Length: 289
Image (cartoon, rainbow, N blue to C red; front, side, top):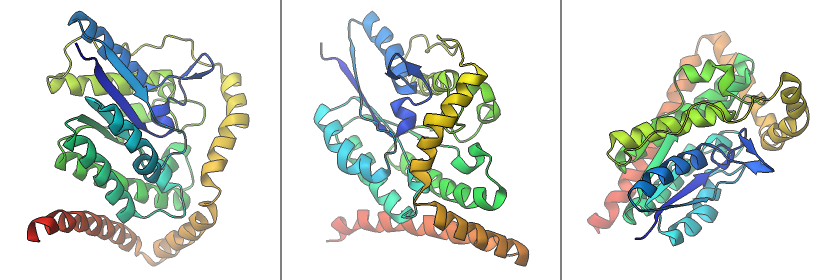
């Protein structure tokens, strides 16, 4: 009997950063795959799990590098969770993000794979940045989440609302860098995805355990990681954004002083609407021809 193939695409969240095992990372997708493997074993099947996610990946990387390799594996189940790194770049363009995700989602659904997606919390809020710096990032992440919501519905994806809920403010769920879940947080994502699969009739066994397998890092160990590897991780992804982010913050404060902050939200909403409308037009063009 052919094994069930589960392929995960995305960035450091899916790679497993924050959930160390041995010399590498495990993460929510691997935890979910292990749970699905136990279910498949009861039915005399097996699960082949391949994690193509790479730390720092943007939607362009998923489209150009991860998608071809994933399609060659002909997955039955595929997760595409990406977008935060796009918001941390000076090249952020919601039209491009929407077009790339549309292509990726479409390719998998045309191949018959079950698609898993998720909306994510904004990095500025998770890092506790000052309001003028956090609001532009939050606006960008809301734009990405709106696109992911719309496209997930269009392609019938199993979609997780990971940008909301009590888990966001529960420090026990998060690693020292505040951007990545710790083991408990990764398990929470695996449990929630499993619940969605169960509701859709695609899983019927016990969910992955929500309880950590390993002791939580001590406060001193967490602070040491943040001061070394963690700080470097954030710095590498924000270097090209910082000048633009400061300019966005100045613009934010200027609008706030004038009482016109709503214009920034309206502008972002209009950009998202235009990006999704452009996809709809492109979808209709072949039929019109």
